[in-house]
Length: 113
Image 1 (cartoon, rainbow, N blue to C red):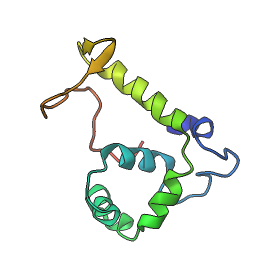
Image 2 (cartoon, rainbow, N blue to C red):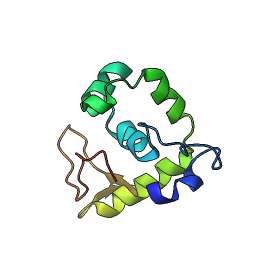
Image 3 (tube, rainbow, N blue to C red):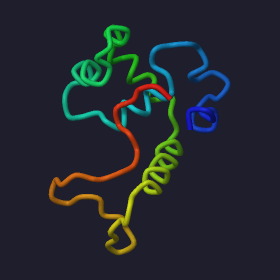
């Protein structure tokens, strides 16, 4: 998706074009794994590298607003394709109901494409 990010942003000619720390890939990764803490705490948790320590919450909010809903729809489709033997309930995939873990072939530790 990062290679064709133009189709997933609101202004393809402008959004995520400059060389910045909050890239399209990093932003999507961050949004997938964000927890319930404050934005600044989640930034520290997700980007614990010293190169990312100066990212502000406002930069995350601004970058998030540049991404279309179609990016998340496509990401969900790609994620569902990685699931092994998904259970279904009324045509919906059930991943976990009771807090159990979800097994996927997608690695979740990388912040680089």
